[in-house]
Image 1: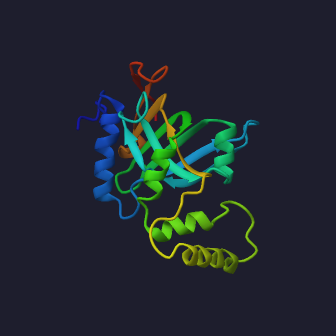
Image 2 (image 1 turned 60 degrees about the vertical axis):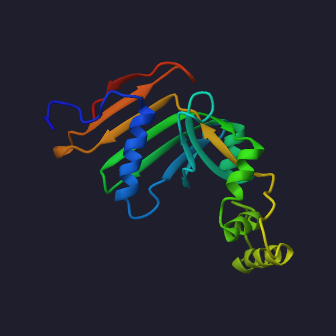
Image 3 (image 1 turned 180 degrees about the horizontal axis):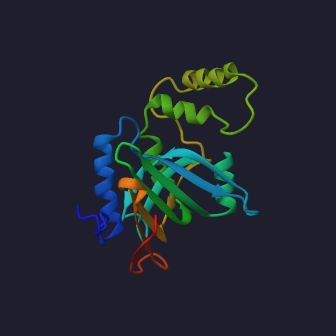
Length: 207
C-alpha cells in the first residue's frame, strides 16, 4: 500500500462493513459481533455497554441498518425508548480496525423479535425470561430459583417471549471506518447521509 493513499476505499459503506466483518469473523478469537452501544437520557447523561450484533445490511428497514436485542425494561432499554438515538463501536483489536456508527433507532416487529428469541438456545431463552435486567438482585440464588421455576413450568419446547424483550434497528446516518497505520498516522474515512435512501457522501478525516 502506497503510504500516500488511503487504505479505506470509497464504496458503499454497508459493502465495506460486510468485508471487514467477514475478516473479523476469521481473525477475532471471541465474539466478532460484539459492539459497544452508547445511549443517553433525554438530559444527555450517557452510558455504554457491550451488546451483540444480530442482524445487519442494506436490506434491513428502509435504509439498511444494524440490529440488536435486549430487555426494554433494562437501563439501556429505558434510555432507548426515551431517546431513540444511539451510536455503535466495533473494535477488532486483532485487525487494528474500528467502525463507528451513528443514527436513530426503531423497534423491530413482534414477529422479528419472536423469531430471534426462539432461535436462541433454550437455556438462553429461560435466562432472559427470568431476568429483571439492571434491577437490584438480593443474591444470585434468587435468579437461579427463577430460572429453575421456568424450567419446571416449561419442561420442553420454546419459552414464551416476554413482551419487554425486543430488538432495535439502528439506521445509520454516519459510518466511520478507522484503520491502524504506522507511527500513528492512522487512516479514517467517514460516510454520511441525510436520511434513509439518501446518497452517501464521504471524506477522509485527520487521525
